[in-house]
Image (cartoon, helix red, strand yellow):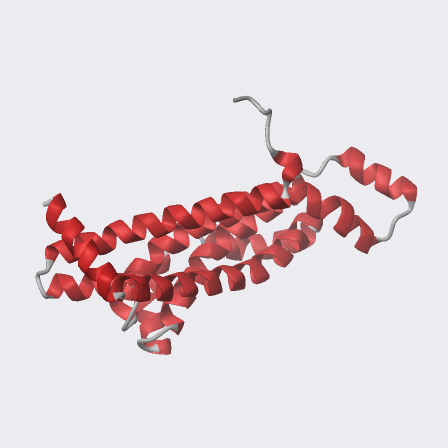
Length: 219
């Protein structure tokens, strides 16, 4: 019942167990997002700026993108074993593609008039990247990061169910085996809450980094 779930939430919160597992999962998520951003954003700008590079990389991306990250669990478990590396690997794989594709789209949507004006002013390629391409593409890149976060947060539960001795996914499987259903639902509720709070943080970061992309201003 909902009351039993609330009682389990209180018990797990009082013991600190729920915060421990949530912190572990959130730290893995932040690490995976950082790695995915570091890999996907530079490659996305490169692909968006060069048709030759996109023609070479895009077939490989479209070959791998439809494969679910969960499908790699057996191989990843064999390579990395049980621990922190496996969930991080799965999340990097899942989060890489939304960031990459949105970065490419953001670069391709840059106003050609801005590029022509920059070229007329004779600015360097580095200045063009810093003052024109990055600010213009950043709103779309941030959308990709939010999509990647949602995909990663969904994938981490499945990865921790099998390949981790800690985290929210591990806790769900542990209490499921013990037939403690209220605690299972308590951790499921925490997954939703942590995901919501992290998305609020990403929205705030998006508004901070791209104040010029707030839309029409309609209330």
